[in-house]
Image (cartoon, rainbow, N blue to C red; front, side, top):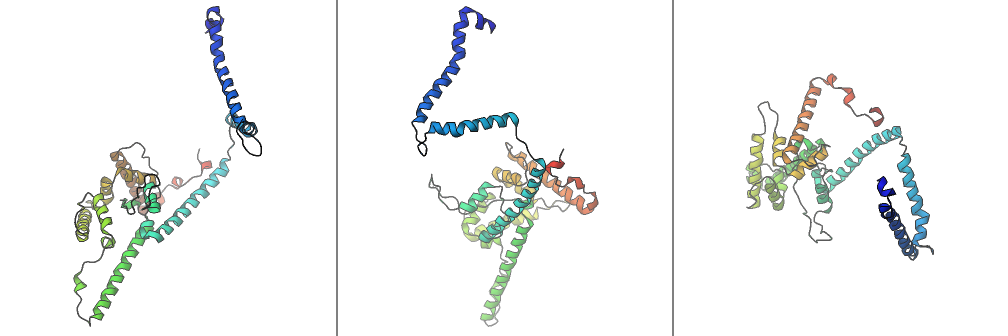
Length: 314
């Protein structure tokens, strides 16, 4: 390097090379200065004046921030984080109650970490502004039973009970209207959720479970009933613990598995389907172990395992 700087043979070329970058930057500045000076801004000012009034001070501020850093009030942030968590729980509950008012108990079971579920709920049936293609108005999402909130399960039970009561009331009115004659509906199977679904929804559900999608509505309903009955018959292990959640994982798509991981704050980026299923099963196993331990002996639960603020973490 010293030879390049001092040897007369190379000195001139070295100086020209060293000055080339500075000269190019200066030429670019002069070119932009002229162009910006000819561009109007507001109130008789041009963009070059805007650059001197705002952009240069802002650049100096960014430089100072990078050199000095930013002071952070950790105690304040810890309090804000606690409040933010509470607010999030409240806002999620409010959104789900509103969704339940629009689409029923499914709104309470919605996974808000799934962009696909949210977009289907908010924009289902709407046309894409660019492609003009309409989004699916109805989609079936398979969710592990462990991820369905208790509030949603209770809403499903209340809905089914209301439908059963309505059916019994209608049957009683029909029987009274016929003068006490025996009703032929006494042997009709009890109505279930499949009776409330449209043919298109039944076909989507059949497709999700790799079942045939051809046939009439009654055939689709019977096909699904048989499939879920088979799953229920084989869902219990020798120790009586249900394995249906694991079976659900096997039949779920990769995107649905990633959504399930996101809902539990589990890592999912770059993982295969087998790795995602393993992640979810391990999480289920941990939850079951903790729950069983707590139910057996609550005093064994470590109080230090509860939530801690940022200021308490060292």
